[in-house]
Length: 134
Image 1: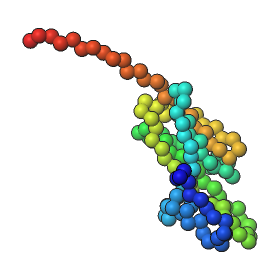
Image 2: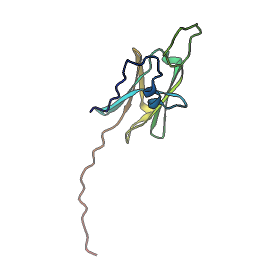
Image 3: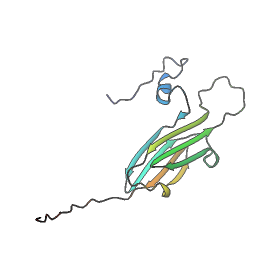
Image 4: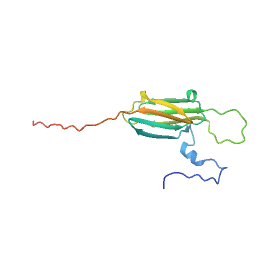
């Protein structure tokens, strides 16, 4: 079993209970992310469709934690039905040891925010410690 939750299309009128479990019943909505560490870089990709990154996204690094915060505002229009989520979306991830959060960069394309943080490779050399007779 892959650990994925299968959502059945048989109950479209019911609220997305699994979505509530993923983001919690209270507080800001979560942001779905994927992350990987490669070639001395830690990369976090976040799904953020329908936002204007220059004014709706805030990215901070505090004490080794990268926090993404975005806001999607609801357009004033009479809707018959909506499943869109509006409001504040947040997600925090712990950076790998040695990550240089002050050198992070971010790019937004096609509804996906990509944050790249340099992580220098640390090589721990083996050192032999001589023992002296007392």
